[in-house]
Length: 131
Image 1 (cartoon, one colour):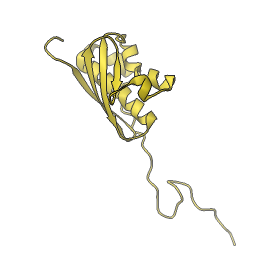
Image 2 (image 1 turned 120 degrees about the vertical axis):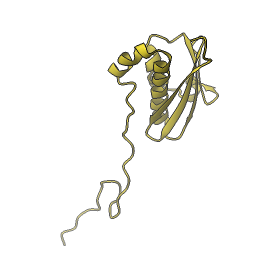
Image 3 (image 1 turned 90 degrees about the vertical axis):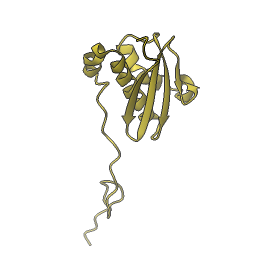
Image 4 (image 1 turned 90 degrees about the horizontal axis):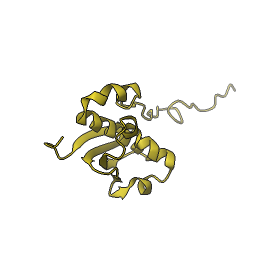
């Protein structure tokens, strides 16, 4: 661990991409230059972003610096979660089965379905008129 300054992981969810760096430290999380609580005020979003650290039992061992762009709040939090999990696997290959078990390494591929012509949304059709 001493030969490398940080551990890197890229996370993706919906249209959001998060670039995560893990530094040995006290457990602070910085997202786009702001603290996690400032960037995402809802407690459930904060806890979801830190799921990977909690599962690996490394909450207070690393400082996390994240650059996230694209998507909305939910997608960004999912991307951060995915990126932290990947960075932890780069740090220690032994946590990979645990991360897999909790589904933290699987990229959630669900994205918005495109709108089709003749329809109002992806699947919603205009009202049918018989006469």
